[in-house]
Image (cartoon, rainbow, N blue to C red; front, top):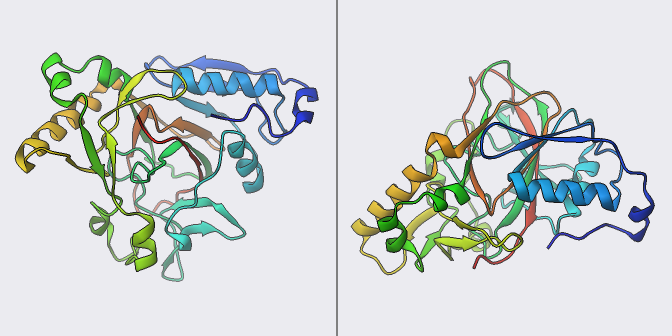
Length: 298
């Protein structure tokens, strides 16, 4: 559970005046007028926390914050997770993964194909991510959108027969399931060492998970990391997973985020899967990601 505050002094910080404006889609809200470069009072943090639970994607507009300020804000929600690809971590700030298509001196400065497939961040860990924060540093003039699919809605609207077929079952999640598909000239997916492979050994999670804070059920599978359903023949497992994937990303379940300069987007990996839509390779894109550890799915 997120900490109510970083320190007792936060109760005495001045509240900020800000608005929370839900999007027309059934997921997401923008937060206007909040300055994350300033520590939040307990009351302001509580409003932000509730908005994150209510809307699953919180878009903080016009955030001129440092990497350390992003880390500090992220830590109010829990322990931060360090990505396995250490070469793409921000210097002096290993809590931040650089998500970027930029190549300098023949070497990528960040993970350029992050989000190529629908996924929930770090679902391949025993303790998957509670949520992720992505802060825009450089944005392309064209493309670069991020799509979010509401898996609470996906579960609520799942056809009865499919619901009965998967409820109570578990599925395997693997970081390396599509890893080699990302190998290219930019070398965004370098060969993993034995130590790195040990950090991302496959895990098993329930197909339908209960949100630990709201109690709502959601599907918890994705084409990016889920490989098979435990206890089913391969063909039956594949068919069921394909049906779940297709249903999860129906247009009525999806919010498409069109980035604005200095956006910080905070999404709930327990409620959503997301996808990077991509942009022309010649256009620079760079964002900083922090990832907050969550609970074991149940």
